[in-house]
Every structure is written in structure tokens, then in C-alpha cells.
Length: 383
Length: 125
Image (cartoon, each protein chain N blue to C red):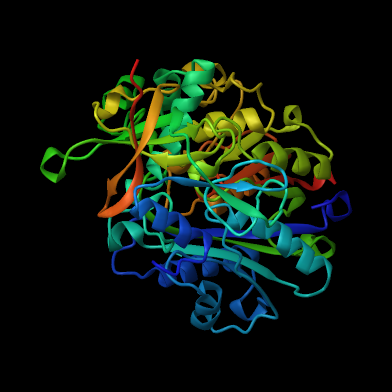
């Protein structure tokens, strides 16, 4: 997104459904319930939606399946699949489509029943041909190898990784919507079952059901809805590879580029951001993204997260809903970074509501650190 | 694969014959991996095949934890060959947890999941 699109669109509705376990529901059921929740939040109906932005894990044409299920005939559809980052990426295409008049009400939506359907991560993607024979466990092995390299180059420790999970849990414990709210210590994380060295099962995101949705309109009518509008000030994407073996530098993600572009479009800096919502599929993600987005220098992410510095009451509020590590992770988490950022700005966060939030960052990750999308959201005060 | 034509077919046929061939760009002289119809560095389309030297270092590594009754733990790593290309593989001949970053390794053609595959063993000396 460029500065010309700064503040041209706004989120006027956000909702979710099926958090945790959605017994007896299909992924599309959860998707539809999420859509209804977000539209209800915006005071709109499904028949108002003329732009649909959707991808799912189940099909090769999920946006068409979703439109059919919802009984709508959108004028504009974007089903770009860049993994969990897709839903942050749709903020850009929705803003463009709205600004160009290609649609008037944009619905971004996702749903999954992966926990109750199979109990593991559902994926429609085939393993890459030059990696599959070695049986990496996707996606854990990829992130484990990124973590190993970060530890090797920068001395990052397993204790520091564990502190990311502990901080996420501390936020989740204050969020009644979060799936995992039990106590969690650094020792618990370190002593948990090792799944892919150096990551234990507590370094990994949850496997839950759940869906989320966002409703967006052009800024000129954004104040005509029940909730305070949340403006898209900047959003940008970058991608670096698809297969983990093709990642040029295992310690630097494309978030360095997506972040720089999003900050430039929004005209703000990391120091201005009051709440940071990152796609924490694994504990190493949070460290990598804090570095690459400019909240700390490369290699200092471990020290940055240590000992509760990103937990409630710390120096920077990160993943204030509990994140994918402790709140919800239905296969693709990206949309929940946007929902939580928007709710912090609106002042109706389900867990800890931070005071006077005008600027928040949502960051989506897709594939195996492959696709990075950064969005900066702001209140009316930031226009 | 007598009539192998495409880059993937040519690579796999050589592998089946016990040879590791790497694609090298005639224009920019850089190697790349995986094999494809163009050079990802300069986008030239004149590609030659070169025998891999077989020497490399472990760039990063993990142990995939698996229950003993299902075969036990195994190594997955990314090796950087002296030619400058990286590939996913595993190091055999030592415990999976003893594979460490920067360890010198030597390639050989073995079998993975029932198909010929590039595998590595610790370099001697």
C-alpha cells in the first residue's frame, strides 16, 4: 500500500466463532458464523456484502465455496493464498477494491474445524518435491531449523524462547475467550515434550477450531456504523521463499521489507506503536518479527522478550489476546492479529484492554516464514 | 527415464544412476538448486549440469522426535554445498542429535522414502 491509500478504508466490524472446539460443525459452518458475527458487529447484513476475501484449508476454490455457502454473489473476490498471512494481505486488496469502487462492503473471512475434525493441522498443500523424501514434519521442522540457526548465530536461548510462550499465556489468562488459560512457567515449557529440537510442544501454537471475520468500508462512510472505525493506515507484503531449504538467511524474514513498507505508508515508526499483534505460530516467530519489524536490533530479540518484557505490565504489549500460542490457532491465525489490533483501538478487547490505544500493528506470517504481511491500524485520531 | 528431458527428470535420472548433478548457469556461472528451466539469479536459460563435489556443511538442523515403535527420532537438516547451493537432507551414521551446525559433511546417493536421494555423512578427518 502507498501513502495515497493511507486511511482510505476502515474496519467497521469484527467477529469470530467456534473458538476452541466447534463440535459438529464444518469449517464452512464456522466461516459463516464468523461472517455473521462481524456483520452483526457492523450492523450490516450478508446481503450488503459485495466484496469477498477468503481462503480456507479445505479446497482449491474456497472463496467460491464460501460465496455459495453464504448465498451471496460478490462483485469482487480475492482468494489469494499466501498461508496464514492471507487475511492481513486482504487488507491491501480490500482497500484497493473499495477505493476503486469495485465493491462497497468488503468481508474478510476464515473458518476451520481442524481440531475436532482431525486433531492436527489441516493443510491442502503438498510437500515440496525436493524436501518430501526427508520427511520433515511440517511446519514444525522448518521453524525448528530457523530457531536453531538463530541460537547458533546470536546466542538466543531456549529459556528466551520459553519466555515468549509464558508471556502469551499470561495475556491469555486474562482473556476469557482464550483456549489455554492454565498456569505456564518457563520450566513447564522447557520440560515439555520435545517435538522438533529445539522446540517443545509448548513452543508450538495451539491446534484449535475457530474462525474470524472483518468488515471494511471506504473511510468516507466509516463513521456511520455502531462501532468506532479502525483505519488501515498502511499495509504491505513481502515474500522470500516457499520451501524452507530455499530461505536465504534463516535468521531474517521478509518482515523486514513488509514492515518497512507498511511503516512508510502509515508515516509512523515502531516507537509509535502501542500494541503489537504478531503471528506466533512458534515462539521463534515472535523473536524474529520483533527484530525484523524494528522493535529491536537483529539478534537482540531473545533479550527483548526475556523475563516478562512482552507480558502484561512489560515494556511492549505483544499478542495481547494470548496469540496463537495460547488464545486460538485454527490452522491460519492471521485474521486474529487484525481482530485483536482493531479491538484494542476500539476499546473492546476481550481480555486486557490497554489504555488509549490509537496505533496498533498486525503482522501475518504464511507458509514456513515464507510470506510476511504487516498492517498498521489507527483510530480516528491518527488520520 | 531414458528420454529424460526436463530439469527434474535429468536430475532424478542421474540420481538413479548414483550421480549427483547440479545445474549451473552458463551466463552468470552460479549454481542453483532445485533444478529448473531458468537461472534464479540472472534468469538466463542456458543451464549446464556439473557433477557435485559432494562437500558441504550443515547450515541448520533439527531432530524430528518420533516414538520408538514408529521408527524413533531422525535428523532433518539443510546442507550448504561448497558450490553455494543448499538442499534439505539428513546426516546418517551418527545420532540425529549429534548433527550440529557448521559440521563438515560429504554427500552420497542413498534412499529416502523408497526413492534415490542425496544423503550426507560426517566428513572424515
